[in-house]
Length: 365
Image 1 (cartoon, rainbow, N blue to C red):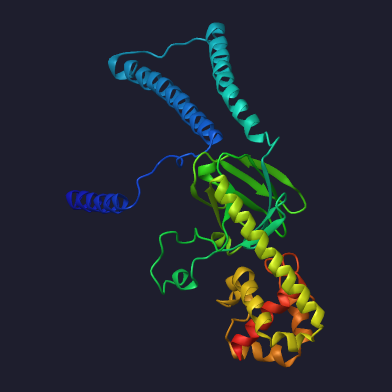
Image 2 (image 1 turned 180 degrees about the vertical axis):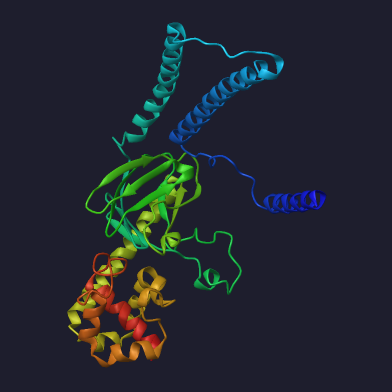
């Protein structure tokens, strides 16, 4: 019986080890791409080393004393009271160790909080479940949402290389520049976390907090929301693309051109003064609604989660369509408290919500 149990445990251990061997055997922090990240990494290793030395010394002395002075070899328990020398030593030595740990930790923490003299400032707003990026100097902004296809999430298709860590719009920054990040949230607590850049800060509704990073190498760095913010918390990735200054300037010019085109199109649509129903039937409005839908509405409405009517489900949309467009818009915008800030009026304008609803209605006809 004992031999059979031992064989079973050994087989389980080998199977687990085989499973681990397939994946990446990584037990430490990600490779750091910022000077601050290297400082954090070195501090981490130093603290771990100090704790390891303390562990070996304390438990080594304890086990030595237990073994050397065990009763079976004739030792008798000693009777003694306080020892001033010992008490001074076990007070002073830990104090000095803590001072030695506090100095580099404080130095790194102060550097982490120094957001002065940035080359670029970006405001980041967290929503359920997406990020909004606003480049304050360049006057451009956009939403960044999960780009992993719903079919992969539902196990209809095989998982991609960057499953749940890919977005439709990446945060683009220049290499070697100090980027200050202003963080807030529009609904609940979020946290903006990119491990390779050693940047992590909570996004709190009603507060603006800041952090910074300076990437040393070009590349793509991925992170996630690190604060449990709801049932779709795992679908809120962050992707930072670090490029050369020349490529960054080109990207900014492209974004500004797109923003100018969108503003011109919106002004033209307003000038026509078309009724909402008629505007919904135009190809331009449907196209704009499709963009808004993919960026802000698809996460819930594509799958029909949280009571959201599923896009293309005529039975779900029919009663809403029958009530008239004004009532439907009131529901969508939040007039009847049917749509929280994750995609409602806290993140989108009324016109954007209307366009997205028109698009979903068009898909259901």
